[in-house]
Image (cartoon, rainbow, N blue to C red; front, side):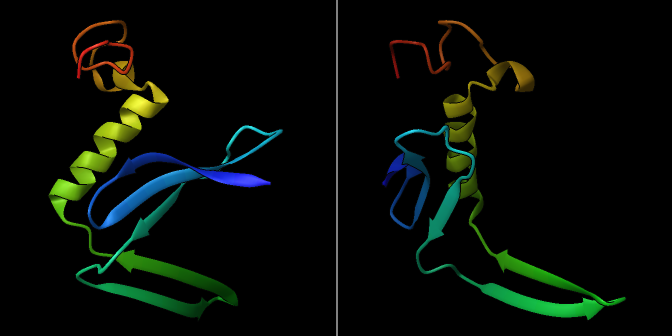
Length: 95
């Protein structure tokens, strides 16, 4: 049995993983509602099938997703941000 564990959400998006009772989540899912544009394509090149999904995401939405993802994964140190209880870290008691 699995359940959706929300990482970030907004009016038109939801970033989540599916948590299984006995396993660490390995994938993340991004659900978008009413994207401005999207394209699904499939082509064959040198006998290999290439599948592609292209979705237009407003910059502000991607900024929000990126910041929440960095905090969720505790990657601030990788991007030069706070790594302890400093302002902006996920461990900081203040938002």
